[in-house]
Structure formats: structure tokens, C-alpha cells
Amino acid sequence: MNHYLRIFITLLTFGFLLIISSCKKEDNTKAACGVNNPAKDIAWLATKIGEMDGSASAGSNVKVYTYNGDEVFYLEDCPNTCADQFSFVYNCEGAELCRFGGFAGVNTCTDFDNTATLLKQVWP
Image (cartoon, rainbow, N blue to C red; front, side):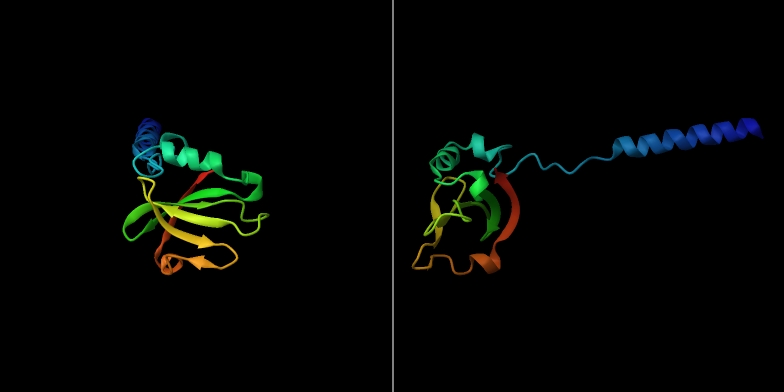
């Protein structure tokens, strides 16, 4: 009986290890537009980030959303401390799709808040 118990425990341990090793983590390495690190790997986006007035400590950030079926970048520069700043939405090629903010309350994509889905923040 003791021999069968050892075999059972060995098989159980082997089965458990097999199950654990076969589990794959979800692959989130492609952050956006087919690249791992869009803030560095997409030239126009890296330039835009370098041009931002605010720093990460001021709340400046870049987020990826899906909007109208496409991945887009939402750039928010200095939202916590700077007055009259604009936020922008760009497609993967760097074309401006939307503009929000300013004293006049500009909103060129009135459906963005209701239809866009946040995927992740890619900077900072």
C-alpha cells in the first residue's frame, strides 16, 4: 500500500507540474500598433512625448484606446497643473484625429468619451 501511495503522489506532483508549466501568460507585449514600446519604437510618438510641456509628475501621459475600431493614442499634456492645455488623439501613423480642451472647451470628437475603450497607458 505504501508503494502505491508513493506512485500516486509522484503522478499527482508530475501532473500538477505539467499543468502549471503549460499555462501561458496573456501576451501583452505588443502595447500598440504592433510594437512593444510605442513611446520609443514609434518615431513620431517619441517626438511628441519629447515636445510635451509637462512632465510625468505633472500628470502628462499617453494612453492607448480603441476608437472606431482602430488603436489610437491619447496624449494628455500636463493635465494637473497647466492651464489651457489641449489633449490630442492620433492614429498609428501620427495623424491627428481629435483635439480636446483649452479655455474654449474644444471637442472635435464628441463621441470619444462614449465610444473609445481604454486599453493601457504606455507613457510614463
